[in-house]
Image 1: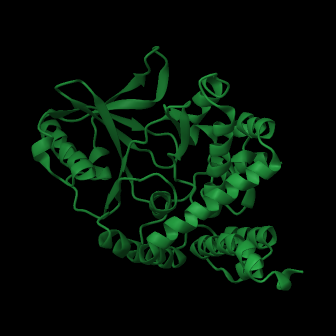
Image 2 (image 1 turned 90 degrees about the vertical axis):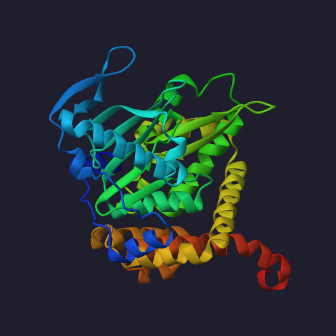
Amino acid sequence: MEEAEYSRRTRQKKPSFLISEGLRTYLRRYRRERELPVTYERLRRFTECAPLVDESGQPTLWETVMYDRLEMDQLNEDLKRIYALLRVDGDLSVMQHLYVDRIDYCSFGNSTPFRIRIVNAYNDNPDYFYVKRGDSSRVYGLELEHLLSPNRMHYLTFGDTLIEEHVAGIPGDVFIDRWLHSDELKPIRVAKELVKFNERCFVRLLGDMRSYNFVVVITPDFEGAQIRIRAMDFDQQTYEGRMNLYKPQYFRENKPLALFCVQHLRVETARQYQREEQVLMLQRRAIIGERFDMMLDAMSGDELAPMSHVIELREGLASHYGRTAYLRCNSMGDLVRENMESIRLAVDAPQRAASRPEEYE
């Protein structure tokens, strides 16, 4: 029933929320807001397009777009400048051998992005970045990923334009089909990362983490491969009202992953991994305390979802954590802040019990 309700909701695209002045001040402070030579609206002025197929000749959701010849040369140079800002803080001296190979456009989804393919002329090695409409939900999602996860996110904003790096990895749905039961991966390591990823999404309220919205990065190690799951779609950051839509384990597309964890992990072990991730998030938050507080202050003042969603979610979280403090929250930013407080209390409770055992008898 919940899955059907979610499918009904997502047929209507989530509204875009403009970047507020409070968020813009934060972005300037931490050098995310930069003056860029190319905007999303400039890329919208293409003159032709052609369907893009994959390596096997199958159609994709992307189209390759073309521009007026007089515009194309300057546009390519300006896109190289953006790539230089994203990768080396604008130092073009180390980027002279790069060229723009292709510009693709996708009309599917909320962000309708452009994807820029940059190629190294010396070795034909490609890289990508995306140009999207600026949306505060997406920006907060990127920033929370950068601050609270083990992954660093490189992105820039300029007015209503958002530039994002490409997140490399195996798409989650492909991983399920081809890698989940591979002998090259240790099942416990896979299950552990799934539990930790599930907890990160829930605490920072990142929704819609169905298998095709995250990637899996496999790193060879001296004793078997390690894996890490990385979110790559942040459109549904703090938007939904249903609490379980922030838990990847409940999506139908992720059912094989949930069953895999049940098969390979005891409940006690899953709770251990969950607590490990909570502690890591608290440690990251402590390191960037002032920055995190400034971001949450801006987030708490922004409308990122209908008030009905905030009320529904705060009631669900109050029941889940057993804390009435949630009922005083009036924004999605308040709820993220309260989630961090809930895991802090959960982590501190055993330490308090050990130091004053008489109070818990």
